Length: 200
Image 1 (cartoon, rainbow, N blue to C red):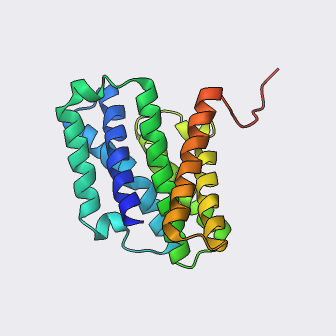
Image 2: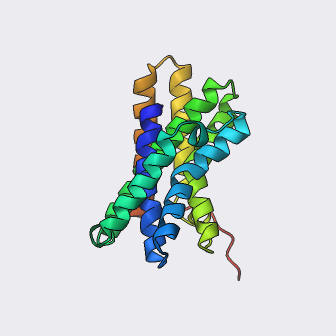
Image 3: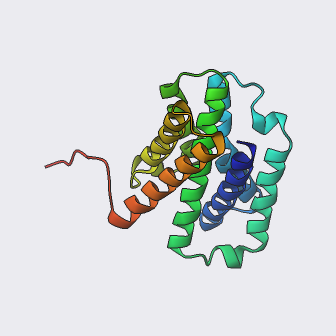
C-alpha cells in the first residue's frame, strides 16, 4: 500500500503540475496544484475513515515527494508540456489505478465495510483531480470523462473481492490495478460513457 501510495503521489503531482502550467500559473501555483492533485484524495479519504492526522500531514515523505515532482515538472516544463495526449491519459490512468487500490486497502485496514471501502478507493483516486478542477474553475473531469470514477470503483471492487476470495494481497492489488487501468484506457479508446440525459 505504501509503494502504491508513493508512486501514485509522484504520478499525480506531475499531472497536477502540467495542468497548472497549462493554466499559466506561476511557480507557487504549480506547486500548490501539484500538492492538491497528489494528496487531496488521500487526505479526504483519511478524514472520512478517521485516520487522523492524514498520512499527507503525518508522513513528511508525501508532501516532500509532491513538491519535488511538481518542481521537477516545472524545471523541465518544455519536456513535460510536450508529452502527447495519449501519454497523459496513460499517466493519469496509472495514478488512478494506484490510488484506487491503495485507498480501498487502507479503508479495509481501518475496519470499513467492503462497499464503503470501494467508495473510499474511488474518492482516493478522483479526489485530487476534483479539487484541482475546482481551484482552476473548471467542470471536474470526473463528472464528464469516459468512465473515470467508474474505473476507480471497479478497481477497488476487484481488490476487495480478491481479498475475500483469499487471493494474496500483492496479487489482488496487481489484479485490481490492472482492471482499473484497462477499463480506463478502453473507455477512452472506444468512447465508453455512462448514460446521459440529453435535452430535446
